[in-house]
Image (cartoon, rainbow, N blue to C red; front, side, top):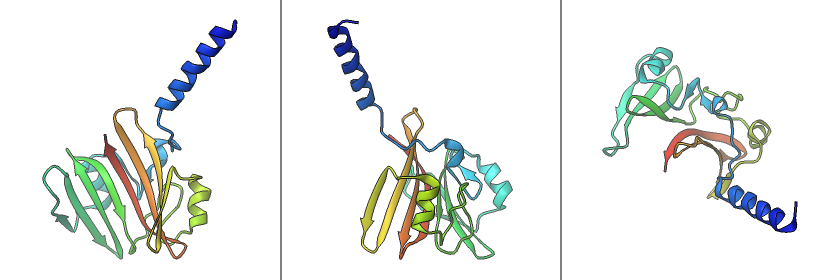
Length: 162
């Protein structure tokens, strides 16, 4: 191969690499919280967790948000067109991710399970880590963990459009 072809090939490879999002690409089957995953139907979620405790008011277009409170477990789910778009797990909870991370797990546990996050932010006395999966359909799934005093205090799974 001559030098001109080699240079052209290298430049094209670099251009393609720059245009692809640089996400950790957690496999979609690992983006699960409490047995819930993005795109799951409303009826399937209700089979797992029975009926919600209530519906939260959100702005028009944000979907429908339901809260579940039972046996010391509290979490919220958001549906758009009857498909799961988000799960929010807060402090009173025993739900875990597929990798076994739950409220109270350590920062070290999260990094051992998921590796280096795609984004990290210090927010006051909390630390946030974001793991992303680009679906290729103009959607990015984000599994995020908030850590306070070295322990996970919040887990979120979101489908971000755009």
